[in-house]
Length: 135
Image (tube, rainbow, N blue to C red; front, side, top):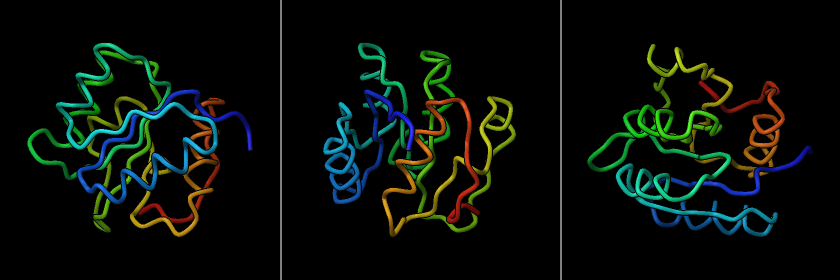
């Protein structure tokens, strides 16, 4: 695995998922900002510059997609993965226009968190490997 991002934003309204992801990536040496809403994520992004984010699409209030679009305006260099519970989720044309691909979409739950770590490393390096678990 290549280098993981030094800092990571995790946006998920499910405490257990957010806390599990945070603990895993902190153990790998990442500084993690964990929040439960898109609004909180944008507050973090106004002050901090995480290199990457893992974002749930279904969030209370602002959706994950709305948050990703706003985050891109604030931090265009931040790399993002989508982590969704929706088997039917497909990237919108707006996210495709930002350069996101289906290889950045993961369906919950990922059985092996190493898959997410590998995808984040590939994003940080500017490339993505094909992986199982995306729609």
